[in-house]
Image 1 (cartoon, rainbow, N blue to C red):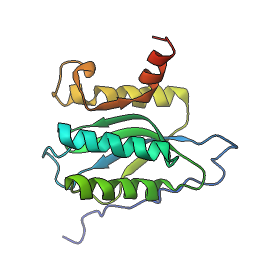
Image 2: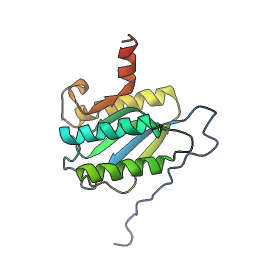
Image 3: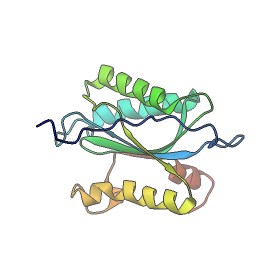
Image 4: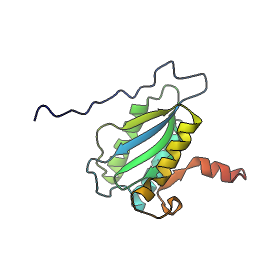
Length: 161
């Protein structure tokens, strides 16, 4: 039993060489619930609380969240973190708030992947938006209502699309 592989917890800090003046890298983030397979997140009451917390942190300059999708037992997001705000601290605070408000049980830590190109960002965006379709929850991604998509909202507001 001791021969089983153990989960490795990686540091979520952005190396100082990555930050270019006034530019912060975007990350693909996955945060999972402790009990997989049980719907804790795709509920209207929980979604309203999640959106309020996301918007609040956005307004306070803790992060820039351009895409956020809640599945039944995990969330996916594309986020950037401002200057001194550490990704791990920002996400830990958000998870703590969501636990307090909605009783969500989260797994320890989260997964992050720095998006290094526009191609990579577009691929992750498609992956995130199509996750409910792959899970068999809806037939088309536009039918899933637990989506915060700032890039689509901004595009609509300036007359694009």
